Image (cartoon, rainbow, N blue to C red; front, side):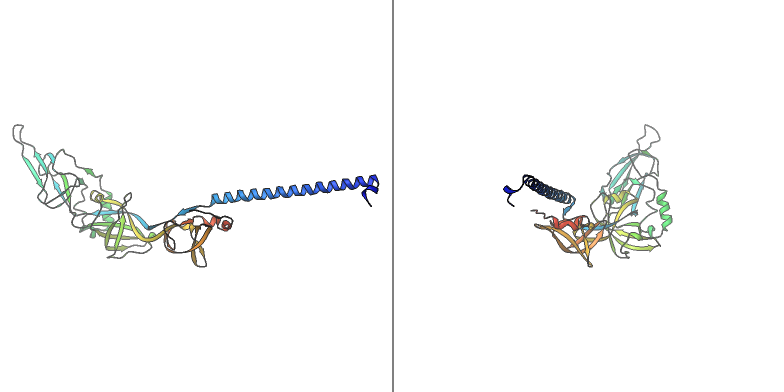
Length: 336
């Protein structure tokens, strides 16, 4: 029936139905647009959060060292010079100075019998070539490169435990027989006596092997050759000779060392950056189109870092794959 011939009441009902239909469709369209807008916004926010969570780092070639901290007892070949008589000391050398044999190291102005008498002057000459030190501890003739092999470990540690604070001898009036200065033979090796915790050692050292060590706060690396090893249940006692050493060792009877037990070279990456799949190891490398899974060979791991092969210096890798790896397909990162 044509709308013109329809009764007025039917016509009005039809118009109301059409308006409701259009209103419903408009609501559906608006809701769909709102959902789409929210979805786009949430997706963008999600991507921004994900990008913020992604941590990358540029890798470099380096060396990892397993450093075992310990304290070493030092045995040196030392000659102590004492005051021949009571009097005033006049030093002719400086701490750390290397002097030849027969070099005058100090003068001692003796005490005269009265004020008008000319006071005698005694010269103390070096009987050997070596390094001058005023750090005297009374163990110079007790702990030597020869006796340290004969002293039991407990006896040796007891001597060091009873050691008084080292004092640097100053120019002053002294009594006869007072130790004044010593000369350390820097031609012959010094001997280091130290203990290492077996639990920390990956490979037990052997007699005749060379161990590297560092002194904390210094970057230089030094070497000692093992002459004797004694093992207990929990530790390894090592006695080793050192032909070259830092000057700090000359002035101390005990010294803190970091013994280098293992060394690994390669590209250094955080251990958490490595992904293990099917008995192989990978890292996510940043590329122009996102991330690429790169096969790497682990050379060694120490304290949260690994030395690997399969990367080049300057490559950028994903540091925290366990956190974001399953979402990487959502993000393409371009870096120059």
